[in-house]
Length: 72
Length: 209
Ligand SMILES: [Zn+2]
Image (cartoon, rainbow over all chains, first blue to last red; front, side, top):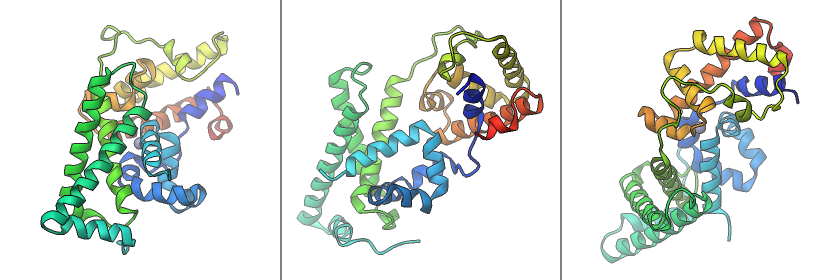
């Protein structure tokens, strides 16, 4: 990957990205679905999946919630 | 769409809406769960380097208490979209997230008005050796940042990409929500890409990759 590619990748946005507010509002539902089947969770809520792939803080919150609900 | 809650979740709701000792017992169980989740989340976030241990314990307890109050207050908003405990844990995780941000909030080290554009290179993981082509590209990007963005988009871009502040810290310092700062950067990225492609600095193919 060249520097140009990296810059282009950083500037590229996913039109499906639903933003932080939607992702946080649905985070509990997404986390339970993700625990069952990550791919199915993403297919069911593409706007949340696209957002979580691009937003570090929301992805970190999902990671925390998944850790809390992970079977021990 | 509200779904019928699973049996465990229905039992939580029933017990938390009961009276007397039954409700008290359920509230104690809930608080214990939230405290455990908050402590685990504080540990997972690995902020020991920036927040002293005693403050971390306080932070976890405060997060658990605040999450508990939120769950109690918003019990009627639970729609059965997840297990009840997952919905409740979300409050604990988000409380820890917010409190860690407020604890680590710092003003940028740079003097006001001095922007370090060389920092962008490290931020994007670019090669240390600058080719002349990159200088041109960077100059075009800088022009686009200076002329093509709204004041909010510009200050969010500078805070995140040049100063390297975390998004939540930028939001806290602007008194804005995470969502509005993310949206400002999102719109800035979209505009900057369009300007660089229109100016022939990047191709549409590179932009789609
Ligand atoms: Zn987000």
